[in-house]
Every structure is written in C-alpha cells, then in structure tokens.
Image (tube, rainbow, N blue to C red; front, side, top):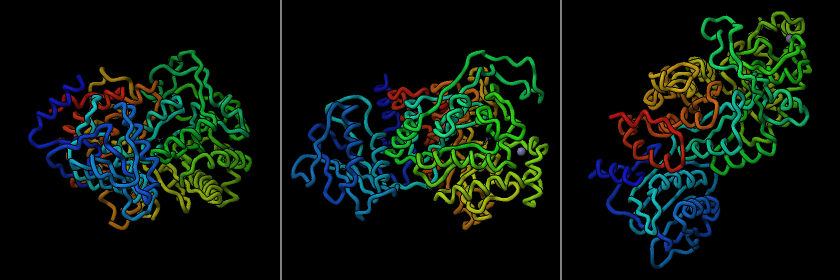
Length: 539
Ligand code: ACM
Ligand code: ZN
C-alpha cells in the first residue's frame, strides 16, 4: 500500500521530479538518473574527516535497520564501485548547521564544516530513500546547498499536565531531528505536577509529582468565569517524574541529534505542585494540594521570603548541570498577584526595594534569579510577562501573548524567541470541525497558518530583527492525554513550522509544501506516527 502510494505520486508529478524534502532546502537542483546504493557501496571517511564518524555510524545504522546491510567504511577513494563520501572543506568540525549534499550516479557527497551539518545532510538523504526493502536502493540525483534561516528552531512539550514516558520523549526528539529542529523546550513543572527529581527536596516529586485526581473536560470557570461545584473529577491518582539519570539520558540522546534541551522551571507562578510539597515558600503557608484542575493557581512563591530564593537556587543548582545548553527557562508567566498584595513580607519587600507595585516585585524576583543563574555561567529566558516592571539585564524573552512582547524586547536589544498563540500553540484546534476533533483548549491554528508564519515582525528594523533568534511551537497538554494525541496535535504542523524556520522566505510555497507532504506521509506511516490527516484532502 505504501509502495503504491509513492509510485503513484511520483508518476502524477512526472516529468518534473518532485523530491519530497521537508523542510525544503535553501538550494535544490534535481538531475536525471539515480545513485544505486547496495551492500557493495563503500563509505569513504578520510582521516581529516574522522570527526564525522558518529554521523557515519548513524547513517550506517539506519541502512542496517531499514535495508539489512551495513556498508564498509574505508579511508581512501575506491578505484571501482560507487561510494558515499563525507568531507569537511575547512577541517572545522562542530556545531555548524550548513551542509552540501551532492548525489550523482557514482557518488554521494556530504560536505559541511560541522557535525550538525552532516547530520542534517543525512536527514535529507533519509527523506530521499525509498521505504521498501531492496538490495538495490535507487536514490535520485540532486545538488543541495542548505542552511537554516533561523538559529532557534524549537518545539516544546508540557510533561507536567500529562506525563510522557522517557521512550515517548525520545520519539518526540526523533521527530524534531527529522525536521531539523534544534531546541526541545521541556516543560517540567507546573501547578499540576512537578516532574524532575531534585535530590535536596525529595518531596517535590513524592508529593508535587502526584495529584489525587484530574478534572474531566473543561472546568466551569473557563465557560463562565466562575468556579463550579459541578466540575467532575476522575477519582484516579496521577503521577510520574524523571530521575536525574533519565534526564541525563534524554539530554544525551537529544545532543546526539544536535538538539539542545531547554528545561523550564516555572517561577514565581505556576508553582502550586512545589508549594504542595514545601508550603513554607508560599505567602500564606498553605496547606495546598497539587492542582487537580486546569488553570492558574492564586498561590505562588512568596517574593518577600529570602528562603524562597535559597530554595529555588538550590533547585537550579541541581538542574543547571544536567543541561549543557546556554539557557535556563524560568517561566515567569501568569503569576497572579493577589497573595503578594495581602502578604506583609511581600509588601515589605516592595517598600524596602523601592518597587512601584507587584509588577515591580515580579521584576525584582526575576532579576534576583537571573543574577544567580548568570553567576553560574548560564542565561535566563522567560515568557513575555518578564517585561512587566522591567526586563532583567541579560534575559532572553519568549513571546507568547502575540508578538508585541517580542517586538518590545528586540527593540531593547534582548534576544527573542517568537511563540505567539496564533499560530504557534499546537494545543489549539487544527480543524473547524470540532465534533470530529479530540477536545482541545480552544483556538484555531490550521496547517496553512503555521506554514505561512513569518517569525520576523515587519515592525522591526533590520538591526532589531537580528535579535529574533527564531520561533517555536508549544504543546500544552491539559487536554492531550497520551502520546498518540501529542503526535496528532504536533504532526504535520511541526513539519509546516520547520519550513517557516528553515527555508528562505522567497522559496516557501504552501501548495508545493502540500505536494511534498503527501509524498512524505508514507514515511510517517512507516514510522507509526499518528499524524493528523486533514491535508490529504487539500487539492
Ligand atoms: C503560557 O502559555 N502560559 C506561556
Ligand atoms: Zn509573600
């Protein structure tokens, strides 16, 4: 079935050869003929390109898994037979993402100054390979010169509201790698569950990692703004967390695919699960329970208590060494200020520090944490509320409530990741036919709106636009109950976003993307991805 789909599609678009690469490369030329890969094909890895051995092993492992043959690796050019050669023109081997891939009838040549570039070249090659097993694998001749448009190409996953197993997180990372994303934003803590082991504070996971039950459907306040006794709960306790060993394993797995894992430790709001475990760091002293419903808790960390900062710094001291990336996400969003207004300690802090109001106190909070994080050699990134009361001096900003926050921060020369609700929230509906869709939080972000998204706002000058590092999509999981649903909500919107982040603006074309996506879909089928199929009916 898969085979016939591919060959039908290829006939349909003949004679112009369509190579279904997503994201579309910067420069792509096709030519006649094929390279025929077989067990006799050699891989050439000369001494000056030895640093690419991990990528060569990755490719060979792919051939072994999919075609049952492993290719011999040699270090001189063969005098007969065809070969795959991996070279580095500048003998510089590192994080550089640009690559060239040239396929003619005798040779496949990968060239890059970086391991990441060679890895991306291999992702491109994989998309050119036929799905069916054979002793002779025909690969179309192409000339590709490729480079990303943005340096930050991210996908987020909320593992607090629903927990996803280590193997599922790795699968998610596989999908990111396939589409050349390079950041996995791991939302590890929230009001509804704390999911990362902190050795100094074991109650964070033993108490904060559990909720006694979960609301069924939408909470009433979302419908009419008021809490309701009619909200229904499932009566089933829910838990799960990642040990530090799990985290290290996932980070290393992502790193092998040139993906940086960005951990998010929320503060000062979205912190009820932590406060259920350690209520002494709240304004009222509790007691609290890990949230069993969706929405935002009034109870947040007390900003007037120095011990709150010691607690958070201790947590960050354990978290930071687990993640080699430059940034730590400290949340900063949706911190309700009611408790701070009534708290003598918080009010004293406002007076002592000459702060204007509670927004000023939020800014004080973030700046104090930033100072600690900077002292450990890392940078903070936070949601756009960290603009309120003044940005911390070195903070990067993630713009989610539209793009205004991102514009304001870029104008202040702060680095920005765009992630506006429209179209970057993949927990929103992708079809208007809500009856047929799984219950979602709301909104409408169909595939075309994601594809057409341009992360660089017109309001910025060329100089200011340099502060836009890129964009990412967020997958919040209040209504996403298992990994199959994560796949449904993320794919193919993730593929569309990859092109918005990678492909030059003037090369983007939605119709062409859909043609390629239809050709690409059998690969998703083979991988067993539960992708959304609305695009199949686009003419
Ligand atoms: C957010 O969606 N609260 C960042
Ligand atoms: Zn307080």
